[in-house]
Amino acid sequence: MEKSELKEKLAADLKAALKQKDTRKISVLRLLLAEIHNQEIAKRQDATDADVMKVLSGSAKKHEDSISQFTTGNRPELAAAEREELEIIKTYLPETLSDTEVARFIDEAVAESGAQIPADFGKVMKILMPRLAGRASGQTVSEKLKAKLATTKYESA
Image 1 (cartoon, rainbow, N blue to C red):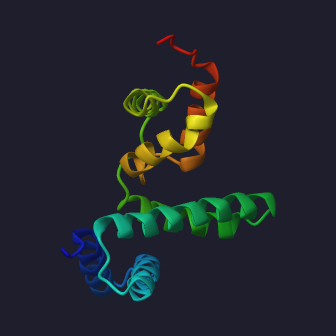
Image 2: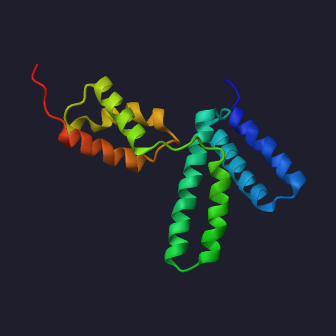
């Protein structure tokens, strides 16, 4: 199995941050690398880029949730700190897709799977999520796919 280039980039950036004494970036990168290491231990194999991407996406989602909770709880200083950390994480994630790009991926996956009814939802998501991992939120994709399948008409064979 090949080594994760993304993991190596994180480690190299950690070394650079240590030299620059960038405490916020050091903290974020150490946490990410620890999560990746824990995943490797659990799987008993080296992390792939897909594994690292999953850790990054999960961490970004946790930070987004924290930001909304701190904002709701009237803790702007904590929300600002979470935003800074989220920006660091986002530099390692691929650019998020626009709604039209997500819709295009959904259309392709629906055509590829032959889905026609809402019950085919799982079949389409199985095709979609590996393609969109880290580039679109699962919740957004799920909502758009449900709407698409609800409006899809049966094609007579």
